[in-house]
Structure formats: structure tokens, C-alpha cells
Length: 185
Image (tube, rainbow, N blue to C red; front, side, top):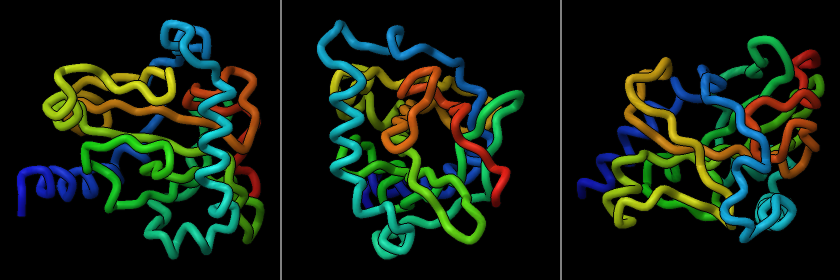
């Protein structure tokens, strides 16, 4: 097993803690996260929609290797993230690919699931080692750095939420979404 594969496996295990505890990341507006004006939120949101349309049916997500990590994650004082379906094969691989998000986010609607967004997650050390110490950017959107030590008990990592299927009044890349609820789980 290569060092990169070992890191991927370690991150697949650690990500469960991250998903459960997400939300301690400082909230930034879409304007603050825009990278040099090279892209608008709409560009990345549209690409994510095209890449994840097939996952509007949660059964397709399961067939592609995604599985629910926890129940619905509610915000500490507002909004929610929903249920994260994580693909262990993608977590910790050191890659960021708009076509393959590490996590799909669903809002519970009774016994159904509605796709509302995705999350891209990458170990900082792995990313920086293979990308000349340059922080990750996806279609002009900077990732948020979550330093270690952190409440997730993870190594330092980068993450980016994209609310492609549910409008977020705070911005397309803010962690918590006031338009997502865990009320119907």
C-alpha cells in the first residue's frame, strides 16, 4: 500500500468524526470566498449540478459508494447541513474533482432524501505535498482551512460546501444553510 493510499484510508476513517461535528469552521460570505473574481458562484454551482444530477436518487449514491455517516446535522443556532453521504474511496485521496465530491448532502423528507448540496474535503498535508504548497481552489472558489488541533480531532484539512440544489441565503459556499432542516427525519 502506498503512502497516498494509507493516507486515504486513514482519512476515510477520520472523516466520520468530521461530518458529525462540522460547523466549527468560520462562516464566510460568497463574496469573501470568491477567488480574484475569476469565477462566480453560479459557475461552480452549475458544474456541481451537472456532475451530481444522477444522485438526486439516493439509491444511485449508494450504488456509487456513498453511505450515510450520521443522522441529520443541525446548526448550532440556525439552519442545518442535512445528512452527509460520504464516499470513503474519495475521502483522503488528495484529489479535488468537481465531478466526484467526497460527500453528498441530503435533506430528510420522511422516508425520502432530497439532494441539497455537496462537500469537498481534502487533507491539507496531502494536498500541499502534491500541489506545490498551494491551497486548493475549485472553479475560482477557495477552500476553508480547518487547522489542527480542532474539535473534529482531525489533521489540518480543507473543505468546501456547495449548495447546488438548495439556495442558501447566506451564500452558496457557507457551511450552514437556513433553508435546510432536520425537522422531517
